[in-house]
Amino acid sequence: MEISEQFYPLHCFVRHYLWGCRAHGEHVPYIADLLGKGTDCSTPWAELWIGAHPSQSALVGDERSDETLLHFIQEHADAALGRETRQAGYDSLPFLLKVLSCERPLSIQSHPDKANAARLHQDRPGQYPDANHKPEIMIALTRFTALAGFRPLEDIWADVERFESLARWRQVLEEAQPLTLRTLCETLFKLPFAVMRPVLRALRQELACLEKPNERDALCLKLITANPGDRGVLFAYVLNLLTLAPGQSLFIPANVPHAYMEGTGIECMANSDNVIRAGLTPKAVDIKALMSTLVFEPLALAPVPPQEDGHGRSVYTVPVEEFAVEFFQDCTVDVTALPENGGVFLVLKGSFRLEASGRTWLARRGSSWFRPALLREGKISPCEPGSCLVWADGIRPPAAFS
Image (cartoon, rainbow, N blue to C red; front, side):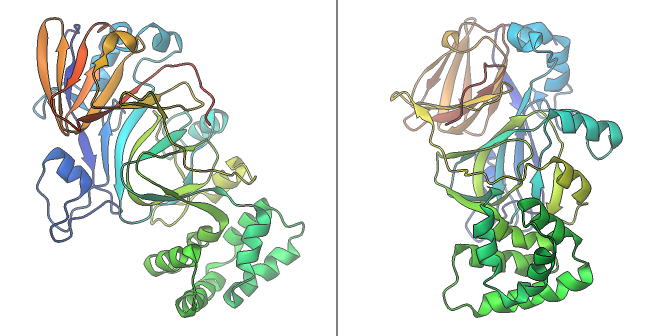
Protein backbone atom coordinates (compact mmCIF):
# COMPACT_ATOMS: atom_id res chain seq x y z
CA MET A 1 0.00 0.00 0.00
CA GLU A 2 1.36 3.40 -0.98
CA ILE A 3 1.31 6.25 1.50
CA SER A 4 -0.31 9.61 0.77
CA GLU A 5 -1.42 12.81 2.50
CA GLN A 6 -4.55 11.48 4.15
CA PHE A 7 -5.99 10.11 7.38
CA TYR A 8 -5.95 6.31 7.61
CA PRO A 9 -8.71 4.43 9.45
CA LEU A 10 -7.50 1.68 11.76
CA HIS A 11 -8.98 -1.58 12.94
CA CYS A 12 -7.74 -2.08 16.50
CA PHE A 13 -7.84 -5.17 18.67
CA VAL A 14 -9.19 -5.85 22.15
CA ARG A 15 -7.40 -7.84 24.85
CA HIS A 16 -9.80 -9.85 27.04
CA TYR A 17 -7.66 -10.24 30.17
CA LEU A 18 -9.42 -11.72 33.20
CA TRP A 19 -9.26 -8.45 35.16
CA GLY A 20 -11.24 -6.60 32.49
CA CYS A 21 -14.78 -5.24 32.90
CA ARG A 22 -17.76 -7.52 32.29
CA ALA A 23 -21.43 -6.86 31.59
CA HIS A 24 -23.58 -6.65 34.73
CA GLY A 25 -27.31 -6.41 34.08
CA GLU A 26 -27.82 -3.36 31.88
CA HIS A 27 -24.27 -2.15 32.46
CA VAL A 28 -22.12 -2.61 29.33
CA PRO A 29 -18.30 -2.64 29.62
CA TYR A 30 -16.79 0.67 28.52
CA ILE A 31 -14.73 -0.75 25.65
CA ALA A 32 -17.62 -2.84 24.30
CA ASP A 33 -19.89 0.22 24.42
CA LEU A 34 -17.23 2.43 22.79
CA LEU A 35 -16.89 -0.01 19.89
CA GLY A 36 -20.63 -0.72 19.64
CA LYS A 37 -20.08 -4.41 20.29
CA GLY A 38 -22.49 -6.84 21.92
CA THR A 39 -21.19 -8.95 24.77
CA ASP A 40 -22.13 -11.45 27.44
CA CYS A 41 -21.56 -11.42 31.18
CA SER A 42 -18.61 -13.82 30.98
CA THR A 43 -16.39 -11.85 28.56
CA PRO A 44 -13.93 -9.38 30.14
CA TRP A 45 -13.11 -6.25 28.11
CA ALA A 46 -9.69 -5.18 29.37
CA GLU A 47 -7.65 -3.25 26.80
CA LEU A 48 -8.05 -1.69 23.36
CA TRP A 49 -4.63 -1.33 21.69
CA ILE A 50 -4.18 1.58 19.28
CA GLY A 51 -0.78 1.49 17.66
CA ALA A 52 1.83 -0.65 15.94
CA HIS A 53 3.08 -2.91 18.71
CA PRO A 54 4.59 -6.09 17.18
CA SER A 55 2.44 -8.40 19.31
CA GLN A 56 -0.86 -6.75 18.34
CA SER A 57 -0.55 -4.12 15.63
CA ALA A 58 -3.65 -2.37 14.36
CA LEU A 59 -4.71 -3.00 10.77
CA VAL A 60 -4.81 -0.21 8.21
CA GLY A 61 -8.41 -0.20 7.03
CA ASP A 62 -11.02 -2.58 8.44
CA GLU A 63 -10.91 -6.07 9.92
CA ARG A 64 -10.60 -7.57 6.42
CA SER A 65 -7.32 -5.77 5.76
CA ASP A 66 -4.08 -7.73 5.49
CA GLU A 67 -1.90 -4.63 6.04
CA THR A 68 -0.73 -4.04 9.59
CA LEU A 69 0.08 -0.53 10.75
CA LEU A 70 3.50 -1.82 11.83
CA HIS A 71 4.35 -3.03 8.32
CA PHE A 72 2.81 0.06 6.71
CA ILE A 73 4.96 2.39 8.83
CA GLN A 74 8.14 0.38 8.34
CA GLU A 75 7.60 0.37 4.56
CA HIS A 76 7.24 4.17 4.56
CA ALA A 77 9.17 5.13 7.70
CA ASP A 78 10.28 8.64 6.72
CA ALA A 79 6.87 9.72 5.42
CA ALA A 80 4.95 8.00 8.22
CA LEU A 81 7.05 8.97 11.23
CA GLY A 82 8.71 12.28 10.36
CA ARG A 83 12.23 13.60 10.62
CA GLU A 84 12.53 13.94 14.41
CA THR A 85 11.25 10.43 15.09
CA ARG A 86 13.54 8.92 12.46
CA GLN A 87 16.56 10.86 13.72
CA ALA A 88 15.84 9.48 17.19
CA GLY A 89 16.38 6.00 15.76
CA TYR A 90 12.81 4.70 15.42
CA ASP A 91 11.39 2.72 12.50
CA SER A 92 7.92 2.46 14.07
CA LEU A 93 5.74 4.40 16.49
CA PRO A 94 7.72 4.91 19.71
CA PHE A 95 4.56 4.61 21.82
CA LEU A 96 1.42 2.55 22.31
CA LEU A 97 -1.98 4.09 23.12
CA LYS A 98 -4.57 2.03 25.00
CA VAL A 99 -7.97 2.18 26.60
CA LEU A 100 -7.61 0.22 29.85
CA SER A 101 -10.70 -0.86 31.80
CA CYS A 102 -10.50 -3.00 34.93
CA GLU A 103 -12.96 -4.18 37.55
CA ARG A 104 -10.33 -6.38 39.23
CA PRO A 105 -6.81 -5.35 40.29
CA LEU A 106 -3.91 -5.83 37.93
CA SER A 107 -0.67 -7.37 39.18
CA ILE A 108 1.83 -5.57 41.39
CA GLN A 109 4.50 -4.74 38.83
CA SER A 110 7.23 -2.43 37.64
CA HIS A 111 8.90 -1.64 34.33
CA PRO A 112 12.70 -1.52 34.02
CA ASP A 113 14.65 1.51 32.82
CA LYS A 114 16.58 1.27 29.55
CA ALA A 115 19.80 -0.10 31.08
CA ASN A 116 17.99 -2.78 33.06
CA ALA A 117 15.71 -3.59 30.13
CA ALA A 118 18.74 -4.20 27.90
CA ARG A 119 20.28 -6.48 30.55
CA LEU A 120 17.09 -8.45 31.18
CA HIS A 121 16.38 -8.80 27.47
CA GLN A 122 19.86 -10.15 26.83
CA ASP A 123 19.63 -12.62 29.71
CA ARG A 124 16.00 -13.73 29.24
CA PRO A 125 14.55 -12.61 25.90
CA GLY A 126 11.62 -14.98 26.28
CA GLN A 127 10.45 -13.19 29.43
CA TYR A 128 11.62 -9.68 28.54
CA PRO A 129 10.95 -9.35 24.80
CA ASP A 130 12.65 -6.02 24.07
CA ALA A 131 15.43 -3.75 25.33
CA ASN A 132 13.27 -0.67 25.87
CA HIS A 133 11.93 1.03 28.96
CA LYS A 134 8.21 1.49 29.55
CA PRO A 135 7.31 4.76 31.27
CA GLU A 136 3.55 5.27 31.13
CA ILE A 137 0.77 7.72 31.85
CA MET A 138 -2.76 6.86 32.97
CA ILE A 139 -5.50 9.43 32.28
CA ALA A 140 -8.76 8.65 34.04
CA LEU A 141 -11.99 8.51 32.06
CA THR A 142 -13.91 7.33 35.14
CA ARG A 143 -13.03 7.33 38.82
CA PHE A 144 -9.77 5.36 38.87
CA THR A 145 -7.85 3.87 41.79
CA ALA A 146 -4.23 2.75 41.78
CA LEU A 147 -1.35 1.78 44.01
CA ALA A 148 1.89 3.49 42.96
CA GLY A 149 5.23 4.35 44.54
CA PHE A 150 6.53 3.58 48.01
CA ARG A 151 5.03 5.30 51.03
CA PRO A 152 7.39 6.69 53.69
CA LEU A 153 8.83 3.85 55.74
CA GLU A 154 7.42 5.14 59.03
CA ASP A 155 3.89 5.18 57.58
CA ILE A 156 4.21 1.58 56.40
CA TRP A 157 5.57 0.46 59.76
CA ALA A 158 2.71 2.18 61.60
CA ASP A 159 0.24 0.05 59.64
CA VAL A 160 2.25 -3.15 60.07
CA GLU A 161 2.21 -2.61 63.84
CA ARG A 162 -1.58 -2.40 63.93
CA PHE A 163 -2.14 -6.09 63.22
CA GLU A 164 -1.32 -8.98 65.53
CA SER A 165 -1.43 -11.29 62.52
CA LEU A 166 1.68 -9.57 61.10
CA ALA A 167 3.79 -10.26 64.19
CA ARG A 168 5.90 -12.84 62.32
CA TRP A 169 6.77 -10.31 59.62
CA ARG A 170 7.59 -7.67 62.26
CA GLN A 171 9.88 -10.13 64.02
CA VAL A 172 11.79 -10.85 60.82
CA LEU A 173 12.00 -7.13 60.06
CA GLU A 174 13.38 -6.35 63.50
CA GLU A 175 16.03 -9.03 63.01
CA ALA A 176 16.97 -7.60 59.61
CA GLN A 177 18.18 -4.24 60.88
CA PRO A 178 18.60 -1.61 59.66
CA LEU A 179 14.96 -1.28 58.67
CA THR A 180 14.72 0.13 55.13
CA LEU A 181 12.31 -0.10 52.24
CA ARG A 182 14.62 -2.66 50.68
CA THR A 183 14.75 -4.91 53.76
CA LEU A 184 10.98 -4.53 54.14
CA CYS A 185 10.46 -5.93 50.64
CA GLU A 186 13.21 -8.54 50.96
CA THR A 187 11.73 -9.98 54.14
CA LEU A 188 8.22 -9.97 52.69
CA PHE A 189 9.33 -12.02 49.70
CA LYS A 190 11.60 -14.35 51.66
CA LEU A 191 9.00 -15.49 54.18
CA PRO A 192 8.14 -19.11 53.25
CA PHE A 193 4.66 -19.86 51.88
CA ALA A 194 4.14 -22.16 54.87
CA VAL A 195 4.45 -19.07 57.06
CA MET A 196 2.60 -16.62 54.80
CA ARG A 197 -0.56 -18.68 54.35
CA PRO A 198 -1.57 -18.69 58.04
CA VAL A 199 -0.41 -15.06 58.40
CA LEU A 200 -2.71 -13.96 55.59
CA ARG A 201 -5.61 -16.07 56.86
CA ALA A 202 -5.29 -14.42 60.27
CA LEU A 203 -4.97 -10.98 58.67
CA ARG A 204 -8.17 -11.54 56.73
CA GLN A 205 -10.01 -12.35 59.97
CA GLU A 206 -8.57 -9.26 61.67
CA LEU A 207 -9.58 -7.02 58.78
CA ALA A 208 -13.10 -8.44 58.68
CA CYS A 209 -13.53 -7.68 62.39
CA LEU A 210 -12.35 -4.05 62.30
CA GLU A 211 -15.01 -1.66 63.57
CA LYS A 212 -13.71 1.32 61.59
CA PRO A 213 -11.61 0.09 58.67
CA ASN A 214 -9.86 2.78 56.67
CA GLU A 215 -9.53 2.88 52.90
CA ARG A 216 -6.37 0.76 52.91
CA ASP A 217 -7.96 -1.82 55.21
CA ALA A 218 -10.94 -2.13 52.87
CA LEU A 219 -8.64 -2.53 49.88
CA CYS A 220 -6.45 -5.13 51.61
CA LEU A 221 -9.52 -7.14 52.62
CA LYS A 222 -10.79 -7.02 49.03
CA LEU A 223 -7.40 -8.13 47.71
CA ILE A 224 -6.92 -10.90 50.23
CA THR A 225 -10.43 -12.24 49.56
CA ALA A 226 -9.72 -12.42 45.84
CA ASN A 227 -6.10 -13.57 46.21
CA PRO A 228 -5.81 -15.80 49.31
CA GLY A 229 -2.23 -16.75 50.00
CA ASP A 230 -0.76 -14.02 47.75
CA ARG A 231 1.64 -11.81 49.73
CA GLY A 232 1.11 -9.08 47.14
CA VAL A 233 -2.02 -8.07 49.09
CA LEU A 234 0.26 -6.38 51.66
CA PHE A 235 1.25 -3.79 49.07
CA ALA A 236 -2.03 -2.10 50.01
CA TYR A 237 0.00 -0.78 52.96
CA VAL A 238 3.38 -0.47 51.21
CA LEU A 239 2.41 1.73 48.25
CA ASN A 240 0.58 5.04 47.90
CA LEU A 241 -3.17 4.62 47.34
CA LEU A 242 -4.38 7.15 44.77
CA THR A 243 -7.80 8.01 43.41
CA LEU A 244 -8.00 9.88 40.10
CA ALA A 245 -11.08 11.87 39.11
CA PRO A 246 -11.99 11.89 35.38
CA GLY A 247 -9.44 14.00 33.53
CA GLN A 248 -6.69 13.61 36.12
CA SER A 249 -3.50 11.73 35.26
CA LEU A 250 -0.78 9.66 36.89
CA PHE A 251 2.70 9.27 35.41
CA ILE A 252 4.58 6.09 36.35
CA PRO A 253 8.38 6.34 35.87
CA ALA A 254 10.65 3.34 35.35
CA ASN A 255 11.54 1.12 38.34
CA VAL A 256 8.49 2.21 40.36
CA PRO A 257 6.14 -0.48 41.79
CA HIS A 258 2.47 0.01 40.96
CA ALA A 259 -0.83 -1.70 40.28
CA TYR A 260 -4.09 -0.41 38.81
CA MET A 261 -7.03 -1.36 41.02
CA GLU A 262 -10.28 -0.31 39.33
CA GLY A 263 -11.59 2.07 36.69
CA THR A 264 -11.29 3.05 33.04
CA GLY A 265 -8.69 5.31 31.51
CA ILE A 266 -6.45 6.16 28.61
CA GLU A 267 -2.98 4.67 28.96
CA CYS A 268 0.01 5.70 26.85
CA MET A 269 3.47 4.22 27.17
CA ALA A 270 6.76 3.72 25.42
CA ASN A 271 6.43 0.89 22.90
CA SER A 272 7.64 -1.91 25.17
CA ASP A 273 6.20 -5.08 26.69
CA ASN A 274 8.61 -5.50 29.60
CA VAL A 275 6.80 -6.23 32.88
CA ILE A 276 8.38 -7.36 36.15
CA ARG A 277 5.60 -8.88 38.29
CA ALA A 278 5.64 -9.11 42.07
CA GLY A 279 2.20 -10.36 43.11
CA LEU A 280 -1.58 -10.42 42.63
CA THR A 281 -1.18 -12.57 39.55
CA PRO A 282 -1.17 -16.22 38.50
CA LYS A 283 1.70 -15.36 36.13
CA ALA A 284 5.33 -15.84 37.02
CA VAL A 285 6.80 -13.34 39.45
CA ASP A 286 10.45 -12.35 39.19
CA ILE A 287 11.64 -11.23 42.60
CA LYS A 288 15.31 -11.26 41.58
CA ALA A 289 14.66 -8.83 38.73
CA LEU A 290 12.38 -6.75 40.92
CA MET A 291 14.91 -6.35 43.73
CA SER A 292 17.70 -5.48 41.30
CA THR A 293 15.73 -2.73 39.53
CA LEU A 294 13.37 -1.02 41.99
CA VAL A 295 14.22 2.41 43.34
CA PHE A 296 13.73 1.94 47.09
CA GLU A 297 12.80 5.51 47.95
CA PRO A 298 9.48 7.08 48.96
CA LEU A 299 7.75 8.70 46.00
CA ALA A 300 5.04 11.26 46.68
CA LEU A 301 2.86 10.72 43.63
CA ALA A 302 -0.38 12.65 43.21
CA PRO A 303 -3.10 12.97 40.55
CA VAL A 304 -2.24 15.72 38.05
CA PRO A 305 -4.68 17.77 35.93
CA PRO A 306 -3.88 18.63 32.31
CA GLN A 307 -2.72 21.96 30.95
CA GLU A 308 -5.80 23.51 29.32
CA ASP A 309 -5.89 26.29 26.76
CA GLY A 310 -9.49 27.31 27.51
CA HIS A 311 -10.65 26.33 24.02
CA GLY A 312 -11.12 22.58 24.45
CA ARG A 313 -7.51 21.43 24.19
CA SER A 314 -6.00 19.55 27.19
CA VAL A 315 -2.31 18.61 27.15
CA TYR A 316 -0.70 15.95 29.37
CA THR A 317 3.03 16.61 29.57
CA VAL A 318 5.47 13.84 30.47
CA PRO A 319 9.24 13.82 31.19
CA VAL A 320 10.01 11.42 28.32
CA GLU A 321 10.38 11.96 24.60
CA GLU A 322 8.52 8.92 23.28
CA PHE A 323 4.99 10.27 23.51
CA ALA A 324 2.66 13.14 24.27
CA VAL A 325 -1.10 12.90 24.83
CA GLU A 326 -3.78 15.51 24.19
CA PHE A 327 -7.56 15.62 24.41
CA PHE A 328 -9.63 17.78 22.06
CA GLN A 329 -13.25 18.49 22.99
CA ASP A 330 -15.67 20.64 20.98
CA CYS A 331 -12.82 22.24 19.05
CA THR A 332 -11.26 21.98 15.61
CA VAL A 333 -7.80 20.46 15.29
CA ASP A 334 -5.65 22.20 12.67
CA VAL A 335 -3.04 19.66 11.58
CA THR A 336 -0.63 22.44 10.57
CA ALA A 337 -0.34 23.40 14.27
CA LEU A 338 0.64 19.90 15.38
CA PRO A 339 4.19 18.48 15.44
CA GLU A 340 5.38 17.07 12.13
CA ASN A 341 5.39 13.42 13.18
CA GLY A 342 3.17 10.38 13.01
CA GLY A 343 0.30 10.08 15.46
CA VAL A 344 -2.89 8.20 16.23
CA PHE A 345 -6.22 9.29 17.63
CA LEU A 346 -9.40 7.72 18.99
CA VAL A 347 -12.87 9.29 19.02
CA LEU A 348 -14.27 8.95 22.54
CA LYS A 349 -17.53 10.90 22.14
CA GLY A 350 -19.61 12.19 19.26
CA SER A 351 -18.06 12.32 15.79
CA PHE A 352 -15.61 14.37 13.73
CA ARG A 353 -15.23 15.44 10.11
CA LEU A 354 -11.73 14.82 8.77
CA GLU A 355 -10.46 16.90 5.84
CA ALA A 356 -7.22 16.48 3.89
CA SER A 357 -6.09 16.70 0.25
CA GLY A 358 -9.60 17.51 -0.97
CA ARG A 359 -11.10 14.43 0.69
CA THR A 360 -13.35 14.04 3.72
CA TRP A 361 -13.97 11.21 6.18
CA LEU A 362 -16.45 10.75 9.02
CA ALA A 363 -14.80 9.63 12.25
CA ARG A 364 -17.48 8.13 14.48
CA ARG A 365 -17.29 7.34 18.19
CA GLY A 366 -15.01 4.36 18.78
CA SER A 367 -13.08 4.79 15.52
CA SER A 368 -9.27 5.04 15.49
CA TRP A 369 -7.10 6.79 12.93
CA PHE A 370 -3.46 7.23 11.90
CA ARG A 371 -2.07 10.57 10.76
CA PRO A 372 1.22 10.11 8.87
CA ALA A 373 3.89 12.79 9.24
CA LEU A 374 3.70 13.79 5.58
CA LEU A 375 0.12 14.97 6.16
CA ARG A 376 0.89 18.61 6.97
CA GLU A 377 -2.40 20.29 6.11
CA GLY A 378 -5.83 19.16 7.23
CA LYS A 379 -8.57 19.67 9.76
CA ILE A 380 -10.47 17.59 12.29
CA SER A 381 -13.77 19.27 13.12
CA PRO A 382 -16.49 18.21 15.60
CA CYS A 383 -19.82 17.26 14.02
CA GLU A 384 -21.91 17.54 17.19
CA PRO A 385 -21.69 19.11 20.66
CA GLY A 386 -19.67 17.12 23.19
CA SER A 387 -17.44 15.47 20.60
CA CYS A 388 -14.09 14.46 22.09
CA LEU A 389 -10.99 12.65 20.87
CA VAL A 390 -7.68 11.61 22.39
CA TRP A 391 -4.50 12.16 20.36
CA ALA A 392 -1.03 10.66 20.87
CA ASP A 393 2.18 11.27 18.98
CA GLY A 394 5.99 11.38 19.40
CA ILE A 395 8.84 12.35 19.27
CA ARG A 396 8.58 15.60 21.22
CA PRO A 397 11.21 17.25 23.45
CA PRO A 398 10.89 16.05 27.06
CA ALA A 399 8.88 18.41 29.28
CA ALA A 400 9.02 18.80 33.03
CA PHE A 401 6.15 16.90 34.61
CA SER A 402 4.41 18.93 37.29
